[in-house]
Amino acid sequence: MTNNTGNASTNESYLEQASDLASRAIGTVTGTNTSTQTDEHKHEAKRDDGSWDQTIGSAKESVGNLIGNQTLRRTGAEQNAAGKEQEAKSQLQNWGEGIENRAQGAIGSIGAAVTGNRSEEDKYRDLHDEGKAHQLSAEADMIKKNAA
Image 1 (spheres, one colour):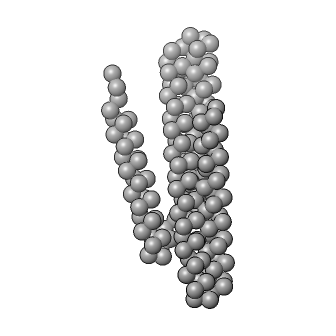
Image 2 (image 1 turned 30 degrees about the vertical axis):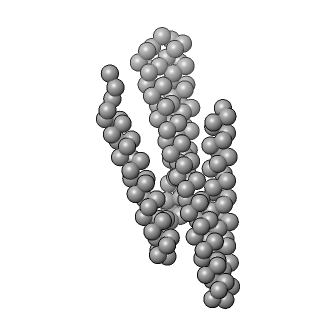
Image 3 (image 1 turned 90 degrees about the horizontal axis):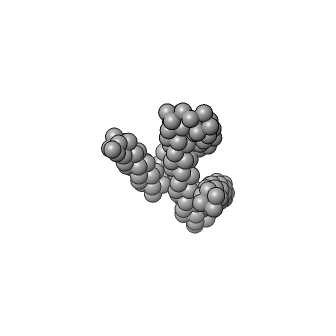
């Protein structure tokens, strides 16, 4: 028997993420940046939590198999799967934020160059470069996970 409750909450989570990305995209166009440094650290923590859940879940699953405890094996497998999902979501979100920052940086840099504002141009160029680094880092993590 399948658990539809888990699917509903997963779908709601995806909708929340899509809504958040749309809000940030609008903020990028209007010039109001809603992402904060705290949000970035929160995403990194979720990513680390996902890795932790995978490690602990895998260990529980192995111990459960070793001692013949099906409940421990099953809860370990569930924790491992939840950790993989959490890490994948975080990677995707980091990738999207990287693309967003690259676009905002490129557009802002052009606008600042047109007006002759060198400090703003440098600020937007830094934002672009930071976004590129986040995007490439997330892409490398996704490729590494898919290769494993």
